[in-house]
Structures are given as structure tokens and as C-alpha cells.
Length: 157
Image 1 (cartoon, helix red, strand yellow):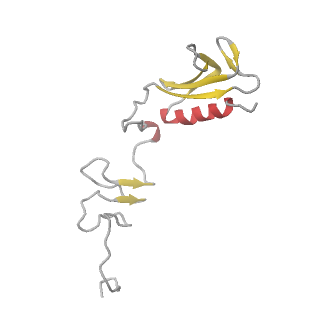
Image 2: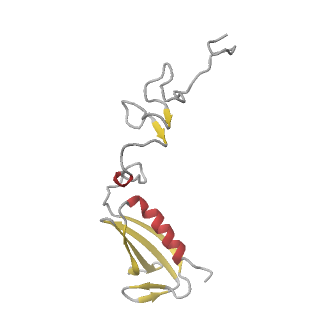
């Protein structure tokens, strides 16, 4: 009988204990912690931590970008989606109302997001009236773009 009072082979681990300790015979930090102390490791990113404070305020974290890199906090970013304007179209600063098939672009630069539209496949971009706002965290660009698409894309009228 083992020390746990159970017969049979001793249980094995995959590098993780519930209390946050490294499993026997496992390199420190090779496992994961859940709501426990930060995983210690000599290799950055080798351990994972869930629901615990990383010590870095959310507004100071660098957002992940495609390709595994990180975007600088003020680095320009952009998202585009084809939309169909609803009744009344989309008001722009330069030419007034635009209607029909459009492309919506959400640009992030220097702590601000700006919404732009163009007629689909055209060259000229127009600023959406009232479509500029402060956005301190560039990680919010996807959410802002998604909301703008939800508000402006009305193919059914």
C-alpha cells in the first residue's frame, strides 16, 4: 500500500501540482499554476499562470499581434471590413453621406482610434463624422472595430 492508502502504481504528474509546487523530477517552472504563486523558470514563457496577478498593469501590457510578436503601445494598427450602409448611409466629414457597399477601416495611432470609410474598391478614404476617440490601450482596437461594424453594417436596411 502506498503512503496515500491506495494500492497499485504510484500516480504520475505532468509537471503540475494543485498547490503550485513543481512535481518531483520535473524542471522548475515546466508546469502550470492556477491561482497560485507565479511559475518560476529560467526560460521565459515556459510556465503558465491562470487567474493570478502578473504584476503588470493591464494598460501597460503589450498586445499580442499576428506572427507572435508584440505591437508597440503607440504603433499604428488598422482593421478593415466590407459593410453595406443602412438607411441614411454613413455621414463623413469630407463629402457628407455615403451609401451602398463600403469598406470600413478602424485606425489606431498615438492613443486614438479613427473610423474611415470608402466606397468598396475606391481609392479615397473619408473620416466618419464623430468617429475619432481616445483609446489608451491598442488591444481595444478589435472591440471598437467590431462595435463600429455592428452599428454601420445594415444590409437588410
